[in-house]
Structures are given as C-alpha cells and as structure tokens.
Image (cartoon, rainbow, N blue to C red; front, side):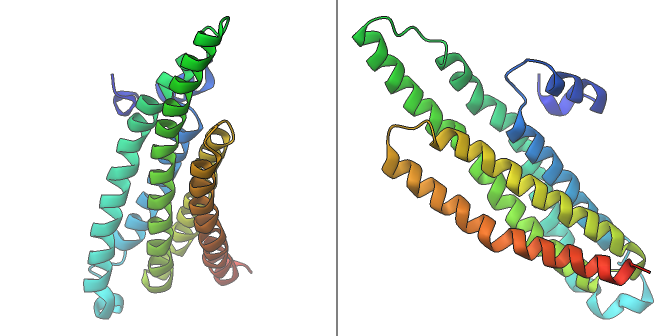
Length: 210
C-alpha cells in the first residue's frame, strides 16, 4: 500500500511508530510538497486578477512547474521508503564470521548508495521549489504573500531534512570518495538555497510586520 493512500492521521501514526518507513526522508518529501502547494496557491489567487494581468502568463507557467515539482515530491515519499527498507534490514545481517562480515559490508554499501539516491532527488526538487517561491513572493498577489512565506519556510525545512538523510548514510559508507562526492553536492545545494530561502522569507516578513 502506498503511503499516499493513507490519510493524515494514518500517515503520522506510522511516522510516529517504530516502523522503519516512512522516516525523515519521506517526511521531508511531504513537507516539500506542502510548501510547493502553497506556492501554487499564491498563483491561483493571482491569476484572473486585473491588477496582475501583466504577470498572469508568467504566473501560469510557474504554477505548471510547481505542480510538476509537487507531484515528484509526493512520489518520492514512497520511493524513499522503497530504497530505505533494504538498508534497515541489512543492519540486522549476521557478522559472526569473516565471510559474513564481508557479505554484510558489500550489501550495506549497495543499500547505503540506494538510500542516498532519493533524499538527493528530494533536495534537488526543494531547490527548484525555492526558486519558484522567489517568483511567487515577488510577483504574486499581495493578499497571499504570507502563503509564499510559509511555503518557502517549508521548502527550506524539507531541503535541510533531506540533507540529513544523505549525510547519515554517507557517514556509514566505506567508499569515502563516493561519499565525499555526494556530500559536496548536498553541501552546495544547502549553501546556495538555505540563504535564498531565508532572504525570501525575510522579505515576506518585512512586508507583513507592523
């Protein structure tokens, strides 16, 4: 059963349990999807308004991109569970003999690589979502500006959350060169997009504060 088929209570009940999935990766994907949806909401409240007629075509294109990102992030909730579950089982493999230790290490390394793949993709989508939120905040309806601020805050949290799911797995890898390569990609996204998200959020905050 897909986690997308569960209602919010069921999903958070499983998340709160000792079940190995969903975990931080799936939760990050969900939060990113919610944040992206809030950007779409800003767009929906902008399109059709005479005041914003000059940016309507651009807003419609932004909304199309946002829907693609949201759909991808929702798919990644299940995808993250698929790649993480084998890793959770691999931790329990026996290591009583040298052969067992070698086999466990081989399986673990493959599982760790797979377990990093989806969180990395989640990070990429969150970066794309933050780029869109910048446009929604700047050009969308001023009546919905708070939603752009909430949206970018969620996308920032999802980006950082997904990164931790990368780092916990790269830390356990024996192939340090491969781990360093993934870490550098993750660090680069964080270094660029966390400050960008903060700038967007602070811009909204400054427009709204008394």
